[in-house]
Figure (spheres, rainbow, N blue to C red):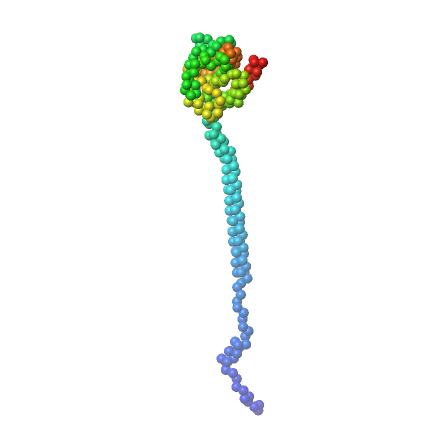
Length: 265
C-alpha cells in the first residue's frame, strides 16, 4: 500500500487568491481611438471654420474699406468743386453785375438832348464828385495838360479791374506825354475810393450816377448801360482828338498809349 502524502492540499480560497495574484496586471483601458479621432476631427473642423469666418470677415472689412475709400475719392472732387464754387461766387456775382452795367459794343448810344461830343469839341461844364467826394468841374480838366478819360461799367468787377490796372501800369508813360488819367463810371465815391485802395490805382475816378457826362460823351445806352470806352482831349487845346467806343479791357490802355505815341511824333 502506497504511503499517504504528507502535504496538505491548499484550501479553495487560497487557490483562488493565488490565481488572481498570478494573473498579469491589466493595462489601463485606453480611450477608444475612434473617440480621440472624432475629437481631433471636430477640433480641426472648428479651427477651419474659425479661419474661414475670420478670412471672410477680413475680406468683408477690406471690401468695406475699399468701398469707403472709393466713395471718399468720388466725393472729393465734388467737395473741392463745392469749395471752389463758394470761392468763385463773389467773382461770378461781380461779373454778372458788370455784364448788366456794360452796354454791348454793337448797341447804339443814347446821345441825349444836347447831342454827343464830336472830335474837336471840348469838355462840357458839368460838375461831378471824384473818389474823395470833392466837386470837379470837368471842363477844367483839359487845357495846358491833356486828359484821358476812360469809361467802365462798374468799379471792382473783373473786366473793369483789368482795364483800370492797365491804366495804372501805363500811368507814367501816358503822363510823360503830358496827359492826366481819369476813370469815369456811375459808381459813388465810397465804391471808387475802395477800389483805388484795393488795386492801388494812381489816378482819380469820377462819379456820374446820373450819367450826365457819360451821355454827353455818347457812351450811354438805354436803360442804364455804359459803353466801355475812352476819350482823349489834347494837351494845349483841350480838344477831343480820339474817341473809342466798345473797347476791350486788356487792350484799351495800350491803344491809348499807341495813339499818343503817334499823335505826338
